[in-house]
Length: 141
Image (cartoon, rainbow, N blue to C red; front, side, top):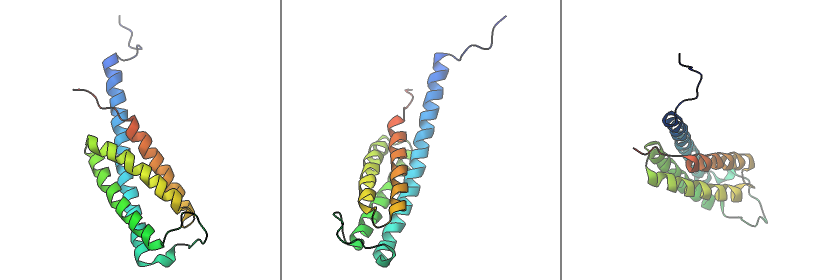
């Protein structure tokens, strides 16, 4: 008689952990793509209709809204392309994704006076991306 209530073997546990980790990386890649597209669209709107955003006088990090448009557009395109690399399992994309998400946090922190709720949501998503990419573990063949 064998008891079937025993926990799975160590190999199965490692495979399960790797599966969860890969799932988190897929989540991070998808969020990078979505955030990147949204950032790019935000940048385009700032470039063509800069009246959409609130101008905040006497803000220490104040830049022209057109400058913010270029920052968001370039950062957004880079985030989306990196997200594609993360989904494909590229190691370089994981590292670049962490760096770009950190830069996105900084840019959106500085952009808070112009579009506060949007910036806070993007910062939260970037934190989740960094967590998921740092957490990822690849199973050794």
